[in-house]
Image (tube, rainbow, N blue to C red; front, side, top):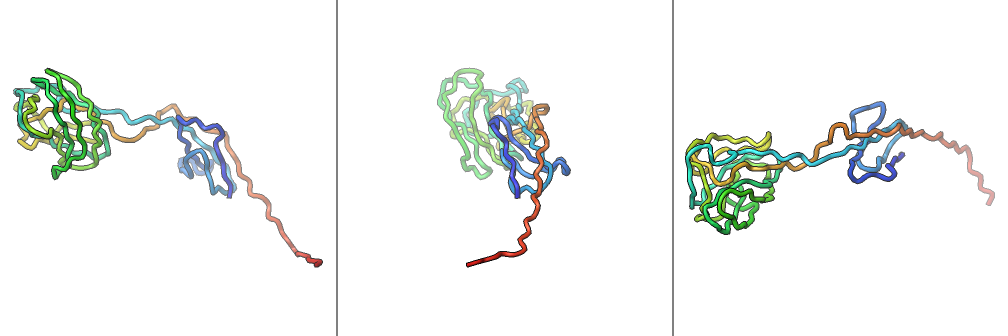
Length: 219
């Protein structure tokens, strides 16, 4: 079996190997292709970037009536792709230290962070890892937060890209709690169109067999 290797690889690129006679079928990835038989091969250098974040949910509180709220209700979230809640906008009526939580559908905490909010509108950064799941809970750890919530003009679901959706709240579909203009990023990379380079063809030639007709031992 033969092997081919990229000399001086660029760490910003990923490498995909194909056989010339079977285009579109990956036979190996990485800087080296191994276990190759006689044939013609190419390697493609692909530049990848993280999948872009998507924004969703109500842009602000102007969707309808509402006010500052001191309960600990939560939003319900479905996610079909492992993702990250990067940030969201909240509105606070006082300076206060609040623990924000992502929970599964049984109330078990998956991720949390504690932030001191300022009065008024602000974008907070959470960095919550969101697993695939349904009825995930996005809320706060306790009451008396003084965060704004809407009790009118709410229109579920709020889809975020094709991978996440805010489907309701635990208090009913007329309420929307705390997290506005959510920024959620699916985890993974995408190959950037136009940033792929293909090598020249490399050929592995099968060596001729060596025939041994006799072994002489004069000892």
